Length: 176
Image (cartoon, rainbow, N blue to C red):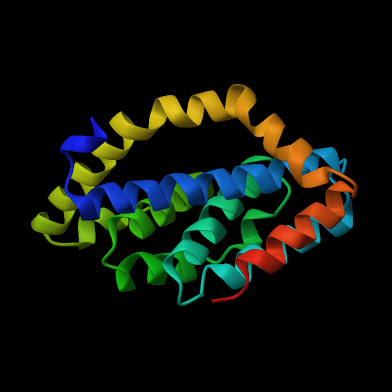
């Protein structure tokens, strides 16, 4: 299926998948760290910084990571300002960033829906990308959540602690 997509769409899907995997891996490392307060703080602070990064990949990782932390009830809903997430949604034209922002807004459980405030052509583009993303990545992400991440967790923790592995990834992602 991915081979029939435009190069840009394929590239954007690959970025979205890699960013999702990075955020998921960080959360699994946090689990290995027994959800320590210092680990939660490290990831929450990094994610809050990353959502404002210039680099698209960093921004998407931050949005996904915040959503995972929120769903696991490791960050408070009040700590995430809806206005900041809406700003990210409206200022970014990339579908992968917008979908990550929408997922986080959905986890926040607040309305109204920002999609209602964009043009019909932007909505169509977002729906098309979302549909392609579901087709292309669901099996990949399901396989990764089922067992693939364990290999990555073991690789990251080889000779070190879960917290140190999280720190290394956080430093690797950086701010920009």
